[in-house]
Length: 282
Ligand code: ATR
Image (tube, rainbow, N blue to C red; front, side, top):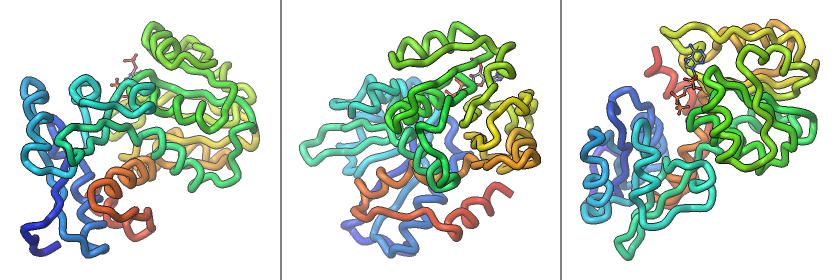
């Protein structure tokens, strides 16, 4: 939107730091292409100010905001009302300012993950076999919650720090089997969905060391890392002829419910949007 009216709806992304966030570019694309009278701005908020900043959003007339690292857990504690899924994931990534001045906290990461998986691997079925999830941060909690809700009944979880994986399995409360990090290659035997939620493979980080030979022949391999788009893990899976799904789509899809809540239009993820966001990744 080149110019805003006095009625413009305002949303943004709260993080610390926030300069690296792709969300302003992503929401900005939708606002512009859909011709919406609205803006989506970066909101750098230091941890000591998060509670004040969140309380101020409705008072400033914001429609809502996204919340990113490191504030997702603090946002869960600060909002007036939490969605069921945000509670189960233990984090809030989407805030909606309600007309009565209260703050509603939701989490759209599970939605983003499963939408991206379904779009990138249409042949994948929740009942096709066991899933193996690597990592035990907030992203892992969202991915596992999404898989359970999609109907996956067998999930293995492996993380360098075993205790964190145990904590995630206990927090989720579903049927999640924790596997020691050293046993991840063996745990890949017959797996039909492998998900990397660790930061390994990201530009500047070590690659994920994972032997994918034991995966099922119809396995899907997906990474939540999107810089680079083709991580070493996805490259090796592709070389084995497996279906791969990159992490950019999760970021794009998780943004859709928030945009709809704030600006009143459900946006779509298109090839042109991907190109637009990728341009800024260099
Ligand atoms: P988020 O909450 O966004 O998922 P995080 O809590 O920083 O992010 O989690 C990063 C994940 O990458 C963790 O699972 C972490 O493993 P630990 O729990 O053992 O820290 C994993 N990770 C990061 N560097 C790693 C490395 N060199 N080897 C193995 N796992 C690593």
